[in-house]
Image (tube, rainbow, N blue to C red; front, side, top):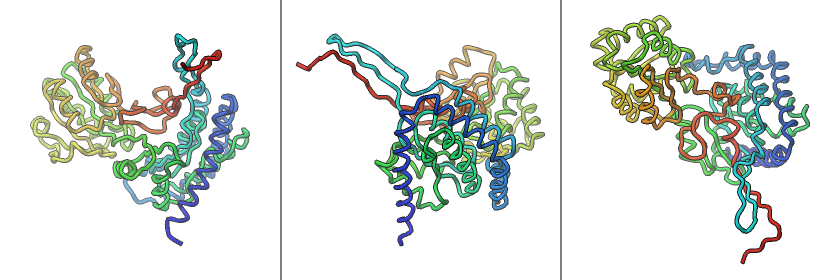
Length: 419
C-alpha cells in the first residue's frame, strides 16, 4: 500500500464525519453547545490523572530545549486552566445567528447579514497540547467541526485530551466527530489535510515558521495563518523607568516560548544610559542572555554582539536582542524592517508619542504601556484563542469566536419579482 493511501483515506472518513457533525452543531441551540463545553471541562478535570500520565510519556521522550519543554509540559494547574478556558467560552455570548447588518431596499425587500459557522476546520499545531482543547472549545461554540493534528512531541497528551473532550460532547448529546484528532504523527496526514479542498473549509496552522511556510506553500484549502512572533518593546525617551523595567522583564521572561514574548528591545538613545543597565541587570537575574548592537555595547561593554541575523530571529528562548534607536520614527523603521507584524509595544508617558507609534505600526496588535504577552485570546476576553492571525484578510490578532464565523444573507420579501 502506498504510504499516503491510508492517511488520505482516514482524512476522507474523518472529514465526512466532521461535515455531518458540523451540520448538527450549526443548528444546535446555544444552550446545548454551552452545556457541551461545560461537560468537556468537567471531563478534562476528571481525566487529569490520565492526561498527566500521557504527558509524562511525551516528556520522557522529549530531548529539546527548556523553553520547548515548557510548551509541552502539563501540570494539574495547566489542565485546570484548559478546563476553565472551556467554561469561560461557554459563558460568552453566542457568536451564531448574530444580525451583522439589517436594511430594507426601496422595493421592500428586507436584507440581513447573519453570522454563520465556517464549517469544517483543520488545525495543525506543534508542541503545546493545550492548543487542542482551546481550539476544540472555540470551534464547538462557533458551530464548527474541527480535525486536529498535533505535533509528534505531544501525541499521547493530545489523545488523552481528545478522549476527555469526546466524553463531554457525548454527555451533551452532540456527535464526538465534532472534535477529532489525527491517528498518528505521519507527515503524510498533514499533506492530506493540505490537499483536502472540498473536505476542509479552512486550515489554521499554529507553530513555528517552517510549519506555517509549508502550509501556506502547499495548501489547496484557504489558510488563516500567523507569521512568527518577532515582537518588539520600544522604551521611549519619556518612559517611566520602573514601569519600563517591569514591562520588559515580563514581556521577555514570563514565558519565553510563546509567540507574544518580546524578542527585541528597542530603547531610545535619550534614556538608554540611565535605564538600559537596570533592564539588563533585571533580565540577567532571571537567566536571560543578550545580542546587542554597537550603541548598546558602548553602554554595557560585556553584552554579546548581535550578528546580522539576530534582529530577524524569533528566539523563543531566554535571549533578547537589543538596539538603541533615535526616536519613534527610528523605532518604527526598525520594526518595519525586522518585525513580523505580530505584536509590538511602546512604553512611554508621552501620549502623543504613543499614539504616533500605534498609528505607525502595521502589526496585528499594538500596545501602550503593557507587556506584549497580553497578546492572547484569554486576555482579550475571547475565552481562548485558536491562534494569532497576522495576515490581512478575514482576521487579525487573536482568533476567537467571532473570527471563526463567516456570514450569509437572509432576504425576506412580500412577493417581489425582479423587473
